[in-house]
Length: 197
Image (cartoon, rainbow, N blue to C red; front, top):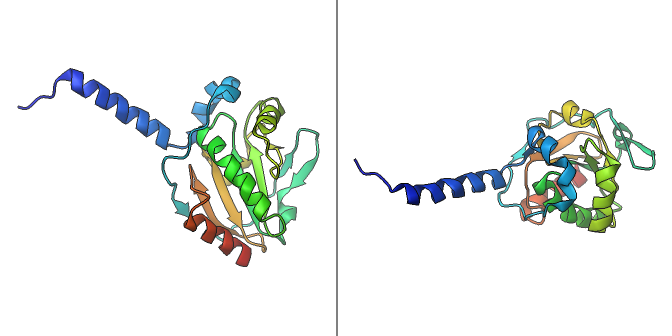
């Protein structure tokens, strides 16, 4: 029987575990422990493209009201009539933070055609989200909050980031769960599909 020396195998196992964790999206359990240190963590670039799901295609915009740090509300169902890109994220989720600058760019480029709504699932809400938005310097995104993760549960979004595209009729076009290349051709085609439909 051929046996690899343990000194060679240990680094390989460590590398495999590190890669596996870095390629995954963020789940609820991982976020609970890391939230207090959210602003200290660096946001690495997405390493793997998440698949596009059409499993929920045709479902309506959710009946949910998000709140911003000042108490202003946004009824998601009222956005019917315009294409919507809904992003569920959190400050403790590295893939979420990695894609936020791209989402800000998309929001700016499509300001008159697409409503991009980012809803934080951070339990500490404004305490973490406001400093993050200030530090990041977003120009087009608004810091909507859902401190109880009600929207995630309603949408069946167990992992973050979860981004859902809706057409102007308020019907879901596609959903992506996990890190995604929002600069790629596939992403541009998905956004165009939401704008057209």
